[in-house]
Image 1: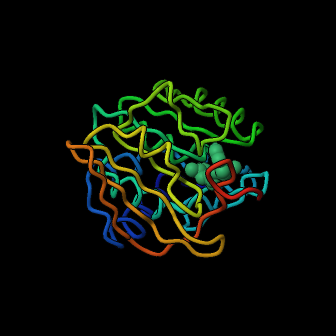
Image 2: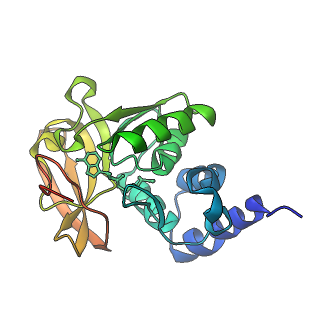
Length: 217
Ligand code: SAH
């Protein structure tokens, strides 16, 4: 008998998302729809619906489902919006985001990961997500402004370019701290151009490496 991925995914949504406080129906529906086992190495597919990060090559990891859901919920991402993700990795979080948003741009610094994620997202039929290879700490000025910016890698500070690329009313979610420990920060830009910043929770992400991040891996 083949592994019942759908059942495992439903259980993940119930136990690890709803059970731990994720309440946004749009986010839950997107998490229930995207097949995480399509984003992990073949020999790990049966672990895809455990609430844990898994290796995806180049020393990087796919984030744990709870954290992906938490960040997207905290960003308030809504239908009709445009989003930027930094740190495509496997493309999993971008796939969840593009189930909600109109348009998602996602930037990855490792070319093999960017190429694999682009091919995977295309194969899975996601047409409103665009994978860009490059240094995401600079944002993506040619596609700005964004309603939401989510960083899937942690850095010492919020890169200035990201704040500049938020539209009024926009929200930015990023792990900020040391290489070992970070806090998830939410930056909001109001209609008058004023930013406010709040701490959400403690997290641990791989390093954001680039000109406005850590200098090396
Ligand atoms: N969202 C991903 C998680 C990937 S882990 C997923 O769902 O699978 C974070 C990723 O950020 C890694 O792939 C890493 O290579 C990438 N990264 C780190 N610094 C970056 C930068 N400056 N620009 C773009 N990507 C970066």
